[in-house]
Amino acid sequence: MWKSMLQIPKVCKYCGNIFLAKTVKTGYCSHKCAWSANNEKKKRERQQKTLDKIKSEGVKYIIITEALRIFNTSRNTLHRLIHFQKIRNKRISPKRLFVCVQDIESLFPVRPEPLVSPKKETLVFDMTPEKCYTIGEITRRFKVTESSVYKHIRQYSIPIRQVGNYVYAPKVEIDKLYNNKNVRK
Ligand SMILES: [Zn+2]
Image 1 (cartoon, protein in one colour):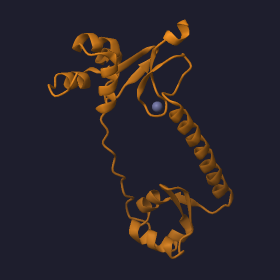
Image 2 (tube, rainbow, N blue to C red):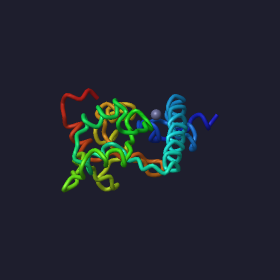
Image 3 (cartoon, protein in one colour):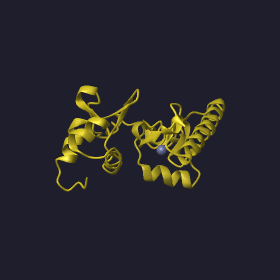
Image 4 (cartoon, rainbow, N blue to C red):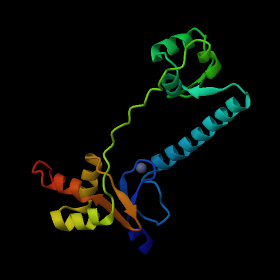
């Protein structure tokens, strides 16, 4: 009986949402997430196998973005040549296309200076406990229910971090959220 009363806030290892777990071991918010995580693991294993096979063939392949960085050509040109089977290639997944280095070398010169890949701008939050509220602190401070907090965190994609049995969310984001009059508590 007491077991079903357990409600441990946890971060789903697949979708990143917070949920209330009934056991300490639960890692996923739903069967769907557990299933998807397992599926992805299998997919990664399959991709790794293909990669290992490519390596063992002794022909050097690199991912297409890397080829574009090194060789003086464009993505469209490479795709056209791939389409006309002028460049050997292996697709590991929809987003990971590997191209044969020797084939590209024979067609294009190396760039005088390799292209610098533009860095994706990501917001970095200070997730140290001092800069965060726990979910409990949020409910008390802003007078919102726990389930609303979870809902808002999901809705506004606020990053969260789990330490032990506590879920932390950055103060800046939470303050911004609840000082905004438009948020329906
Ligand atoms: Zn999930």
